[in-house]
Image 1 (spheres, helix red, strand yellow):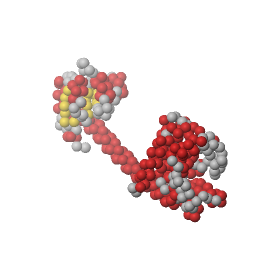
Image 2: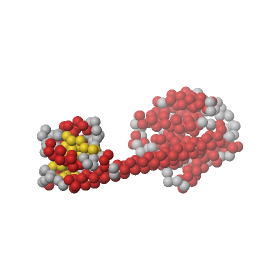
Image 3: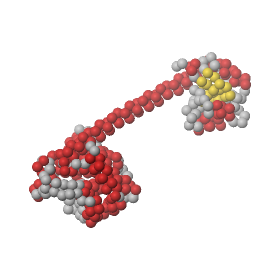
Image 4: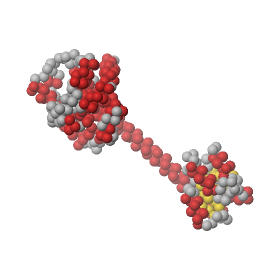
Length: 364
């Protein structure tokens, strides 16, 4: 430790004591003296020392009152304070230490002992600062590593999203739009406090990302069915339905090889339940009403809206208002009535998202 660089403030109303203490420690440290707590506090607004030696019995403001103000100020609360005083009773020492002093030295003092105790305390403070710096650097390293992992996760997710979209050419951009629709729905549901208790534990960002995986099972559907330019037969539609099962199998396989399950938990619900219907006529399990997980009920609205307004080889996409009318008419049969009320309240936002994403696609 290079002690000559350390600065110590000494506070004592007795000029003789100030001179004596300053002469002892100025050999090793930069020293500034003050004959009152008020003058010390004034100087602390301009300069922060490495340590303060503080007398207790002073007029106007005693040492106890002074240290309380030092410790109450965020700018000075971490400055180490040593009481250097003639008060030698145990009660006074306990009072001083309880107020935040790091030591209590009784006058008259031994100059070598005073210097050694100052040296030890400054060394401790220096080591604390080094440890804090190390911890800060470690936290930064962890943050950087976490950020890298998240960026990698997002890159893989985006690649998978593009892969699914390109396999299912006729619904290009569906997954990106679905993520934005989900964001709009979740924000509106929060604003209206709909299903507030159930949503309180959700990680909304992870849900938005997971939305892009809801159709991942389509990767396993053969081209002649997935890309068929016309209506599907009953047999072909039965195969299309299997994209739910295939998607769940993909998520399960990923779960086996990673410890990050929160993201995949949401994805599993979205994959497995977005084709269930409120009246129980959906698939794959024929769940009904609140048996269907809330995420699946939200995703059902998003999925149907985007299907209605998107072009297909066998149909032109409907206009926004036509799609909204169809969804509104399906309230209580296909869809959760409460969720439909939210959808209707923000349907114009859905239209804007669709227009913006389609314009974006033209320039990509």
